[in-house]
Length: 115
Image 1 (cartoon, rainbow, N blue to C red):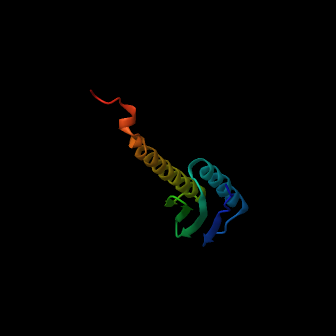
Image 2 (tube, rainbow, N blue to C red):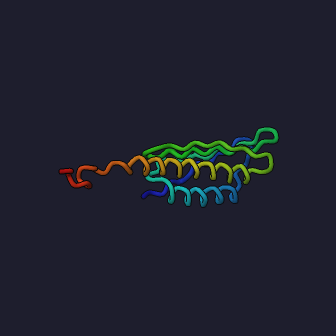
Image 3 (cartoon, rainbow, N blue to C red):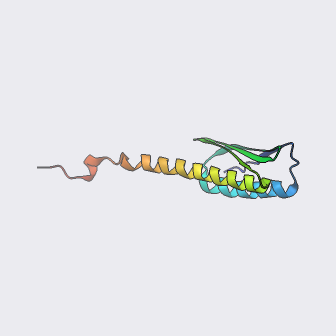
């Protein structure tokens, strides 16, 4: 599995090395646990008036996750909220995949024929 380097963009916000490190470590953990075959990761950090906005787009082979979260307090709060939301979306998608494949067992092969 290839390591995908996230593209981190700041709009009206200077991306500090601490914020970049926080995003890279948390995204690595999230990708490793929940996603198969990640193609690209893009993070846009934006400040508009009093709002801190974090937008995360994870493009994968089987499905994409896009989340936008905002916080009045700090950029770290917006980042954590967006990462939590992306995690919930990925878990929900994985559960749907597993639930969908539960009923695919051939019933005739499992049950003996009725006489």
